[in-house]
Image 1: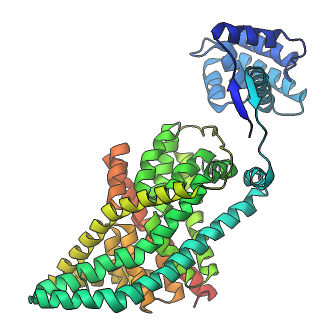
Image 2: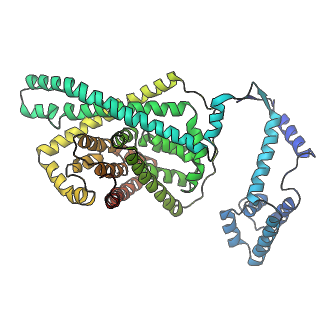
Image 3: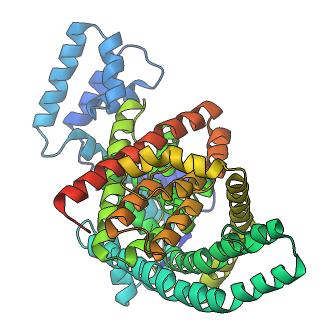
Length: 506
């Protein structure tokens, strides 16, 4: 893209330039004549309003819902009928809707000013990257580009990260070398059975907590952070917001909502904070709900892709279809319940480029530092809680108490109750427990799909609940948790019965 330099020196030059454009006989708008006259006529007879009469007339001619409701309430019936007749008469003389004509007129006016005040230097972007950047925002051809990006993410994270790297670290390094050495050393150094079990037992801080965090989750989140860094540094994410604008309109949002949604794939907690960039309170509230319900964080997403990738691509597609279906259904319903209107999309598109390796590496290292500092202590805390519950006999009782729901409704083994129990602490920790069960052959392919859908739609982690309470209110955070918990199990149970009746993945 060519460089653009502003060449206006002061405010007087700007005024003179705009005056010249307006006085230019060659500057023709598509609403000259009848529509301009209609604006003057309508503005002269409108009731006194909090906004300028011409602005109110423009909104009403564009069939703005708020303007129509206000006029219906404050204008007498004969006047309102006369205004409607004048609008229909004007619309019948045009090939496009009045709102479209007004928008084209504004854009033409802005283009005239921009052309006059900007000095372009250099050459435009050319070649394969420029063509790909254009295709990435095309309503039709942008979909194959998106498909390639998603498949690349699936292969790199789900197959290479969760398959190859996890196998090397968990089975070869930790399983054959590290864990046997640590177990032998702790047994010799601490001849106290309870302490030995606490550190290197079946539910030990090292054998479960650190092994899960370093051998299972670390390679998965590392590959995800690398892939996310490539998408981010290449300039593709803003194009994704343009491509998905029409889709988000179904949920009463605009394409800008895709930015916190995509950031939620890294960390739902931080993505909740980034909803501040959205223009209206309604948009922020709706995106926070969708983030808490159906957007998995990087650690959880990596585990999910790893488990499903080891089964088949069809299993991954079923999981994605169900989660996206719930996302759009809840978004569509919530958009009609929440008051307010959808905000228009205004986003800057940077040039598409090949990502810089240094940028990707620096961002990945920064995110891994966050993972090591925040997630590993929570894994150790979760392991300690499980150990204490096991020792005092509460964990077996909780597992038995959850059997009617987990076993009877979801069709999962009773041991899965402990994974969902830890899901209250962190969803990714619960997903990791299910990952271990799958690796031990305790889950069938059907059960894996049901478990992954349920844990994805599960209540957000404790940190996310606290951030929602901070950003909105404690009442809202509790309300979302109360709604999301039964919704996750309802969808999981219905999916289990649907797949079982069709004979899929059995």
